[in-house]
Image 1 (tube, rainbow, N blue to C red):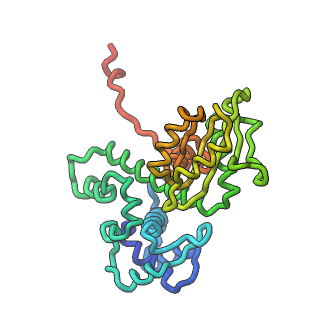
Image 2: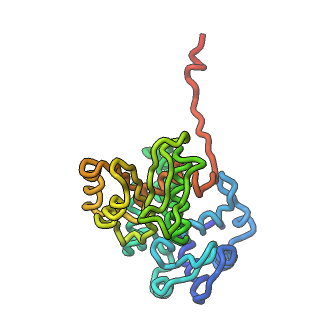
Image 3: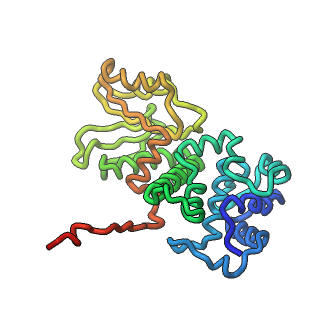
Length: 305
């Protein structure tokens, strides 16, 4: 027996959570391994990075079920089944696939950022002898998939924190990007007048940049009125950065573009997707998991006389 594919683990994960109780990731691993009757050899098999194969695939199954909202993260490494998930446990086929989960808008939105059916492509190129698939493209697509999952999970984790934490996070990110330094700070709420943080434009302290941070659900977009209130708290010629976990309305984006000409305030907008992009780029709140070095033949070496 070989380790099942990730999609073959989805129904077993639902089964392990079908009692309605909260279970740890460790309990899910153990339960799924028992249900699928993994052998000792199966449980010892590892992928190239060194992680146990069955844990890696159960992890992907858990991620997809989470994005389809069939299960929910109760707290760190603790999961429970949702009402929808319980219904699917009773009504869904034995093998739940990505295509099956596409009926859920939350999962469809998650998949929008993936350009190819990665698992199918990998399996065809690896096991069915398909020769027209570029291995380099498979690697690049895999990287895109992993990065998208990381960023989605990062945004979900940010949303689970307090508004105060998000304000502090926003200032720390700007510090990481080279602004501020020792003089960066989160303002006191009793005196902030719509300003959540203050950083300097550079390490020497030239010019002040004012920060507004809103930890809002993605369905609650930041509109023009909120930006006007922020700009209203700034002096003419000031610079401001508005950071949110949500998105900005079209009207808000247009206002941000016009406000420099009307009041001399330069306003930069950072939405949830841009936020996690910057956090990954500047390695804030993330850590390196696995690194691969891809080698190629150095033909110049062989052409030397």
